[in-house]
Every structure is written in C-alpha cells, then in structure tokens.
Image (cartoon, rainbow, N blue to C red):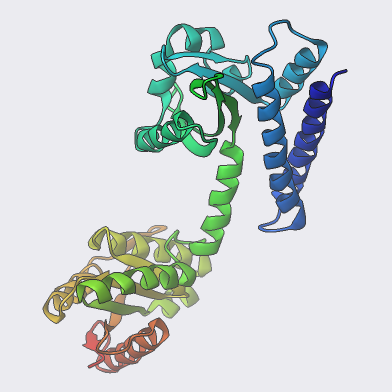
Length: 353
C-alpha cells in the first residue's frame, strides 16, 4: 500500500471514531465526546480532501480507491467535483441517498443540482464558490429541497484543484448529510429558549432578545416597553377543573396574545400564569392601545373541554429607559404596576410611572 493509501485509511479511522463520538455526544448538550467527535471529523475531512486532491493525477483505480469509496458510501458521505468552466458535475453514488436523485441524473443535468439549493441559501453558496475560485478552501452548511418537498441540511467541504500555472482547474470535495445534527441542535435550542407547554419564548430568550433590542434602541433613540400580564381567576380554574384544563387554557391564551403582536415584538411566559411582552419602537400613546387590545382578547370565553371559561388579565407596563435600563428592573417595575392594577379591580392596566 502506498503512502497516500495509508493516509486515506488513517483519515477513515478518524471519520469512524468521529461518528461514534458524535453519536454518543448527541445525548448531551455539551460533552467531551461531541467535542472530540467534531474535531476528529474536521481532521479526517482535511486528510480526505488531500487524498482526493492527490488522486486527480491518478487515472487507474486502485484497491485503496475502491475501499475508500466503499467506506464513504457506508458513512453516507458523497464526493463531488465541478468543472467551473463547463458547469459539469460529477458525484459518487452516495449522493443518491442524500438527495433522492440518481447520480447519473445530476451529472447529465447540471442545473438539477443548483435548483435543489434552498432559495434563502443561494447567496451563501455563491460566496463560498467565490472563495473556492480564489484558491481558498471552503466549508459551509446549507439546505437543499428534495422533489417531495422535504428539506435537508448538508455540509459541503470544497477544495480548489490548481493547474501548474496556479489557476483553478476544478473544484472537488465532500458532501455530508447533517440533517439529524441540525434537528438535534434545534431540539436543544427549543429546550433552552422556549417554554415547553406553550411554545412561547422563555426567560432566557427574553433576556437574549432584550439585549439585541436594547442596542438598537440606543442607536435609534427609540423606546422599548415591558408589559407584565397576570391572568385573573386562573387559580380558580385550576382548582375547579384540574391542571390539564389549566394547561389547555394557558395554550389558548398564548395563541390569542400572539395574534395581537407585531412580528418584531416578543411574547414570553415566565411560568405559571405570568406572561411578559417585549414591545419595540413604542410610545406611551401606542402602549395604551396595546393594553386595551390585550384586555379585549379576554372578553370572549375560552372553550376548553366543553366548558366556557371566562378569565381576565391585569397588566403592568414599564418603559425603557425611563423606568429602568436593566431587564430585571423593568420586569420588577412592570410587576409592581400590575399589582396596582389588580388591586384596583382586576382586568385593568397601570403604567409604572
């Protein structure tokens, strides 16, 4: 076996270890297995790309080539090559399980591959191709759309193959289906930033979004507002009809409130029957209209498991930066204003100042 074959096998061992480590690490948000797995995978890919780059000069297939192809197929990793001047592609057979298209069809119709790229990722891919044509390696993740409407995430690793004059001759590399990893990332994000019952943002997401909006507010000299919402008579519903009915009611309340808000506002649930709305680009006058619309959404009963339930809401409002520049202070002040509204007869709203 020649030195290049040995290098290829070394890289394949690293790939297999990496996939093993990544699969172990998938059960945890952050651990040593997932770190080693991804670092190993990157190292293996670099070795494999070097191997592929070398073999552009080799015309005859070798046993090492056949074994490499077989293992890549088993790992569902596809190789690709592109002639940037003619636009013609070549793919290994593994591309079929990734795209649900025959490799032959993709090679006979080069536009078929480009049409699969998700519209939102086309510019990203073009920038990566520019890097390759400039003689630099590229690694990016983007989405492709299958013929049945499904969307898959792939990781494309590319390397430019240069001629003797230093000009890019062709592009080559690997394509890996990372859809499962992306879904796992999304699941972790969902648990970290969203309420499991209602699907609304949780406190962590509220803090993150507030920091983003705060920077914009300072730059454009615009106000933000915190609306603290506490449901009236919710405890009575829980006590009389049970927690399952209460949970359904909370989800229905969340749905109604979301329909009232603009796309750049954030509705979050802090826990229990407490909700917080972060509003951007507001004035005191516009906040009065928002508060009245929120209270108005409770004028109609909620149909829950055959019961017609009537509840109300007490609101407290604090304004950034007048009532505080820190989120915790703004929430606390809005909470105090909410209790003032509740003490005045419930289903009411009050400003902190």
